[in-house]
Image (cartoon, rainbow, N blue to C red; front, side, top):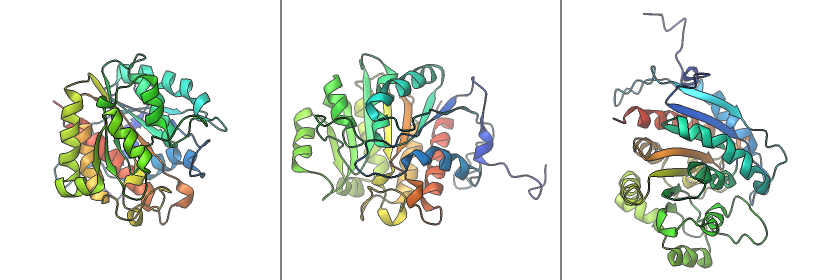
Length: 299
């Protein structure tokens, strides 16, 4: 066995050029047209760098990721590109990845990347489901253009039925009554922060996943990092006090990624320029490792 003094097998070493890998990762550094202007475009690079500080072994469960392989598809060039113009490049880059790999990870970027990610699963949106872990509904009107505040609204307008959308972790005093009314009218499954706290985030995620899986062939999951409590996630400009605990976020990520109908996931709304002591970048890297752990648990 090689000495630990001479080598360190990190999660970063799992990324490589193997197109036959079960998992793929693509960076979508989209920052334009954000309601919370910042540098979310720096996130893919920051997450990759933080992976070098993650081990491949989970001593609590015995999961060993050393045999896992991740095809790294690189980052799209989205500098100064707005969400409308970014739609086709993101969708077209993701579509062959979700076709070839058991799971594809999309590293945003702002939350506008979620809409093209859902379309990449099926151009017609037939039998596609969406689960979001987010403090916000993202149901703002689209009359002023696409932003990180309206990808779910845009998907409804694209024809995705509300009954095939579930949103968990929605925070109080972070959304409007109009958005709440829209969600109810569309038939979206909603679980508030309090409901997630009382039932447990993992149990809530598994319940809504089971509902979506009964209606859908494939599911995309949006992990908006601002669902985490702001004190534990300073690099998430939209995070609020009282959000979910980081350890609940990690547990939910593993449970969700273990579901065979989950074909793609994204991580959004991480702004490295706001981070403190690498707290958020390490949180994102741990999330990445938990996603891989979930995939490793699939039959």
